[in-house]
Image (cartoon, one colour):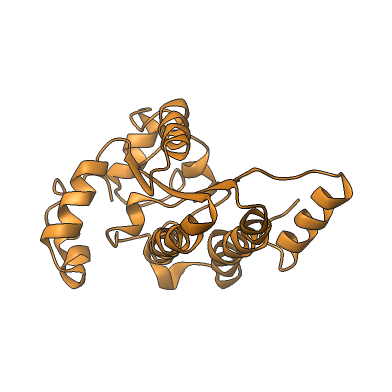
Amino acid sequence: MDLSEADAAERLLAWCQGQGFTVGTLINNAGFACFGEAVDQTVGRMASMIALNVTTLTKLAVLFGAQMKARRQGRILNVGSTAGMVPYPNMAAYCATKAYVNSFTLTLAAELKPYGVTVTCLAPGATQTRFAEAGGITRFGGASRLKDMFAAGQASSPAEVARAGYDGLLTDKKFVLTGKLSGAANLVSRLLPQSSIPETRRRISWLLGPP
């Protein structure tokens, strides 16, 4: 199923109900990035990214979360990102979608906690999946340490990130920060004003790691 389609969340819920499935755990992991300067992006591709990363994730969490609330049990893991903590150049819209996921998840966790439902936000750094290929990072024509990092296989392993998220979900953590450079992103998000981070990132390339 293409989860970026407008009615994907509703159709997925209906399919589960048609199969007689009771969903005890929801993992909202689907997402992709658009890499490059914002005004150089294809508008349709960017809209599809926002629909997948934000709209469908929200609708799935709400639809399945309502069922969990009624049963007074369940778990939801939304995959945010360290990119949602600091605005990176060449990833303006993607960072914004993940900032939404981080914020939405923490608030949803507080709202559903009284009903026995655990909601966890997993915020990984760069992870060695097909993310770079799907987002156009590998095809980016300019200089990019992030492109070099993926090409060299230096990003975190999917198994490492998945384990951190799974363990955090089972231990009722609200926020799980994991992966390479995640600590640096967390530190910078606390020390620098958001308005200064993109320009600082361009000028001091070593501060946040790969752009």
